[in-house]
Image (cartoon, rainbow, N blue to C red):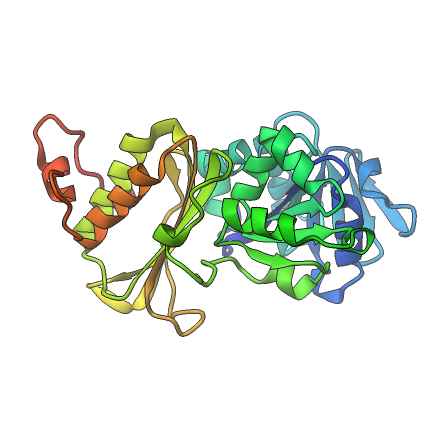
Length: 341
């Protein structure tokens, strides 16, 4: 395998009819997307008719834009590993990033988990963001009726509202989106710049305590803290997050200011019970040096998530042990290092 830097990978999801095909085709017309590998369930679904392309393998075509498009056959991990191998061997052009288009009924959580759990993929690819498309015409009804759509929204870094020109007022949909996932960036345009902006952690307009008390079971909680975090406290927090929430935890991501290196934020991203290798950034990407964290859960209560956060930052709680006491309990699981999760 090549020793080159990990390639950014983007997930594009959205319920049936949300406009994923139109969205991706619009992105492909921007030069900023040249040299991308697009992975779809079937090549025909991405609508290649307007494009001149050359078939270069049984499951891959080369588009006139310089992008590759490959058909997903069988297991996603096997397909991605095969594409990376062929790239390394020179059988495919050296694409610089990967875009995966999910099916309309797909839950993105297993995809994120697969990217972390497979050692080869965890080493070669790094998650750049999840973009979820929501149809302005049917979005509210879809979110009410389909848990898959709610999980697609909860896991989003970027939410793209489509077909806005077909409705007179989308304020109720925008409110629902914010209720479920207040940390996501929101746009109504197929902007390559917005899509490619790496989702370290979004800016936070409010803390979790200010979130709406109602909404779907799949929800994103956002937190921010001014003071640097103790290194050991972060390790304990990540371990307790996994063990206390278990299958309720869909995703965690954050920029952490550690006491040991507050000027070099630690980027953490995890899916379910596995964590991507934490990555030290040279500087804060937006000049905001606060610790910021997003925890995405399905079925967990606000009190469960908020109590873990308060334990991390050392906020006292009545009649509750602190994080150190929980972790140092001889009956508790062993303490995990940052790279052990």
